Image (cartoon, rainbow, N blue to C red; front, side):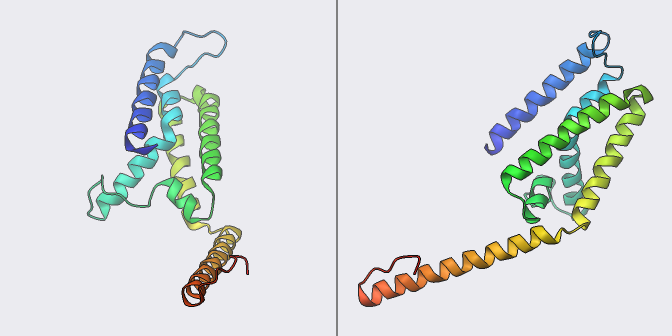
Length: 172
């Protein structure tokens, strides 16, 4: 998507959430939203809190908040061995769960719901970073070893081709 596409998606999300907050209270009799700011925060919770968390980490380490690094949630999940598809499905599912949780918790009040959202998010990130799934790590190591063996075979085939002039199949 790139930086420009990401920024466009972000600004569209922000504008739509602001519009939702302005029009949500009292407008629906089927699914009334009692605390629309909390609902809007629930919709944007994962990208917003992830960005704020990463900015905080960078500032604490004395770097510019705009300097690139691998502290975002998707990088953490990539490093745990998950595929891009699995990460997309996981984060999308979590976003939907956050919205449902927010809607169910709205009767307790806007401030309490937003506080609960923040606590749940940072608890989840802490657990994600400190609980190490052995299966994902094992798959990652096994895949890296297989890829290394395939690359070594390609190099051998290239050396053989250069020295003898005969092409060897990659699977030998």
